[in-house]
Length: 208
Ligand code: GTP
Ligand code: MG
Image (cartoon, rainbow, N blue to C red):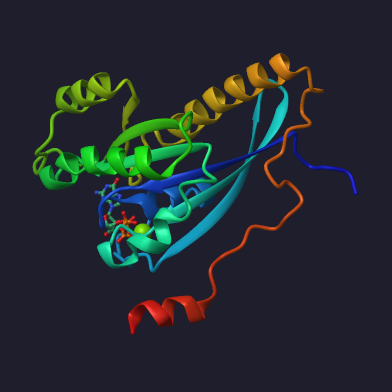
């Protein structure tokens, strides 16, 4: 069967509960927004194929639960990620302070060269803002990580963030391919295997 894409990139969204990870992904995959908060149970994923420099890139984006009780399940997904979005909420100081802990989690559980980006979400809310854009930028500089402020509600920078992360992974992948002299477009991370979601039983087990 003919392949419908040139590259498959696995991305991961992490950050405190309620910062807007699911909404960011919903905006990117369906171009829609929901004001009702339905906290993610465990982990889920969505797919969107984008085009970059004439290449079709299939993005398999994993959306993790921010709640502490799902941490064992969600950290198991760090290893396969090629790019990670670290999300905080600009109206929630605590979620910003916790970015340092999320970075530590990445250092512990992800591969060394994973591409990272920090997102300060909900920047459409101005009256309840607790974290300035400058503080976000400063933190990103400190850790040498890319940074953007986003709004899943107004859709500001959502496309831009995913495209930027995908572009950087593509550049890195192609550099690696060149150095190992493999044919371009032939690099897939388990490309033919359907992604696996954990079974419902697993979640019941965690609730017990
Ligand atoms: P967990 O699944 O528990 O980890 O939370 P989450 O990070 O996935 O949060 P979710 O996307 O479910 O959003 C939480 C709440 O914030 C919802 O009520 C959303 O409507 C709201 N929200 C998310 N993004 C934005 C945004 O950009 N602007 C505004 N104003 N509200 C947002
Ligand atoms: Mg969620």
